[in-house]
Image (cartoon, rainbow, N blue to C red; front, side, top):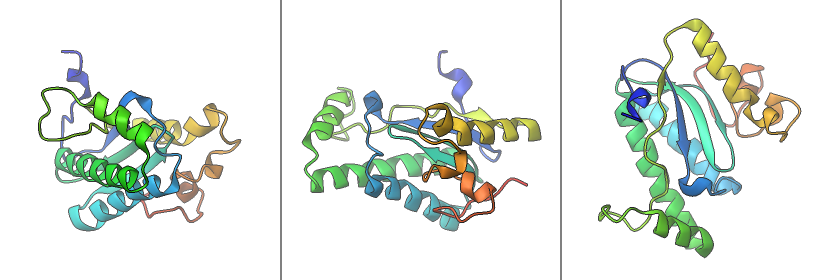
Amino acid sequence: MGRSRYVITDPAAPHFLTCTVMEWMPVFTRPDTVQILLDSWAYLREHEGLQLYGYVILENHLHFVAQSGRLDLSLSHFKSFTARRIIDYLEANSVEHLLTRLRLAKRAHKSDREFQFWQEGSHAELVFSEAMMREKLNYIHANPVKRGYVDSAEHWRYSSARNYEGEAGLIEIDRWV
């Protein structure tokens, strides 16, 4: 019952989503790991019809608002692909301290993998109105400002705030009008 309110209730409607690295480990301090996330979103937009309305990537978690014909499947593809690619990156670069923690984070009943990268679930919230969409996009973009990382939302490199200011972002998004 604890996670029941965080279910993708309408797979074709926009949802606010959060993905968190196991144990809140700071993996997205490396530009290469962030690029894996951006590349995955770009692929899903092009090949699976994902509409990405906004995002922010912080050092250990990310928030985004998205929609697709089957958001549950798109999210599953996103999490499995990015986990595999980021673990490959960490192995290729011998980032043993993170790999050890990800290995220990894997639950005993998960016999299909050596590591657990993402926490289970995505804290999905259905975006059911224009006002809620604005609230979620504002929350996403204000996150680095509230943490004191930047003074202005569009200064955070790993966010869609620039896209909403009419500037070029790191990836294309589907601006909510």
